[in-house]
Amino acid sequence: MKRALVLACGLLVLPVAAAYAQLPVELARDQQALVASKDPALAANKRLVYDYWREVLQTHDTSRAAHYMAADFIEHNPVVPTGLKGFTGFLGKLERRALKPTVDNLVSIVAEGNLVVLAFREELKDPKKPGSKYTTTWFDMFRVSNGKIVEHWDYGTK
Image 1: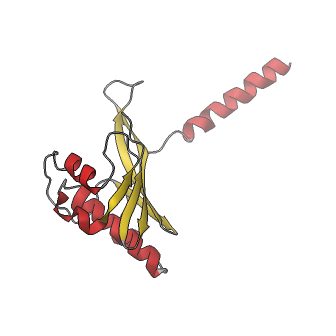
Image 2 (image 1 turned 180 degrees about the horizontal axis):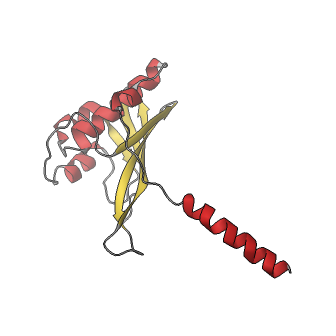
């Protein structure tokens, strides 16, 4: 009897679970709204990181890096050298890209204290469904001090 009850419950839960399967990650519709904040310090930190991402990281243009980053910048990605000089040496080897008015694949920007987190949509190949893709979320976190980015964390792997 117990076994039949467990099986019946399982059969009832299956359609409900399928209805709650992973939904695609959606992009921010208004990126400028993400940069806004009632707190001027948080708005400034968010703007700094947003513009840094657009002008430096997204374009691979190191000419503006010192405007955004401290000389003793700390990098936690294991494949990117730490320090402004190490970072620009690494990024400067990549092919330059055009400056865009927005950040590619941006989902959200959150700021608290001196930390700013950007969330991005990442599209990957589905290992269980050849030829198919799925979306997930990637996060980058920055620490800001005295109007400069001084530290960065992400899910970088070797």
